[in-house]
Length: 419
Image (tube, rainbow, N blue to C red; front, side, top):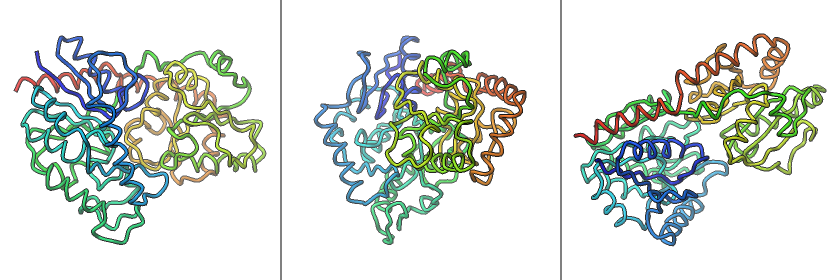
């Protein structure tokens, strides 16, 4: 049976991006394959999941990466990983040598360096790399926030407030181009059309195979539940129209649209609608700088349990996704699987899941006025809201069911492992 090594910064049952890792790993074990996961962070008791190297070495690798971020003066709110260095080089070589197939996920922040990844590719074993964000394409940022300099090797990085064409982003991008550009044993999997188009347009990975397999959602866990019951369990009012916003970092997340939600709350407050609507927030505790009426918000904190998350989706009437940039986020997939229509900004990474009039609606101008107009329309037209709920659930089952998407990965792995 094939021996498969998975490399992922995080391995968790509940962490969004790592659910794909877990689903594929368990599917391979069920098939009788020898599957092992090597990570930086894990709470799993699975004997086939372990730290890539000694925890002290992993900690040093992570601290070095964070030190580079601080020295580079990355603007607050932006994810950045230089990945110039790790202490795991020999461990990576040993794992790769013993493997028939290598699967990469999100591997920055100290797990694998740029050089470690090139070493994996040099072994000429088949490699699958699922792109969780834009980091493999850029000079360090996980999302470029509209910047297109990564198409020409970065430099003068706006996220670093840099005016130098030879800044750290140019060095990182040039290293990736030098070490990764011409590889024939790499298959890149993109979860969204948006990321697929970016990879195909990038000067990197010109000889790699690029395919698309959408992210999956557990449609058995994330399903419509009784709204009254969900609100009772979460101690939410039964008589208010609830707008749900969920993001890692909560309202502090700039890329996910936290500032817009705060502005929208102020807009509702100024319009005298504080008693009509409730904004449900998860992902972090309540920030100290709220200016709107506190009764507009209900903070759930960080929900690490999928059952609690499923209750939150079912308790709400609309899911707010005012994202600036994303890659088919799990929150949106979980929302539509739960039968919760999505109100989204025109973010490219959402277009696979948010279909106008089918799974939700877009507020094209990105203004509070337009968002409120759409919400008021849905509040008044309960029939439309109910139809969106049913069609969103149907669309999620047809296009994003976790078992179906995992089987696509398994078929790909089987074909590559047989080479």
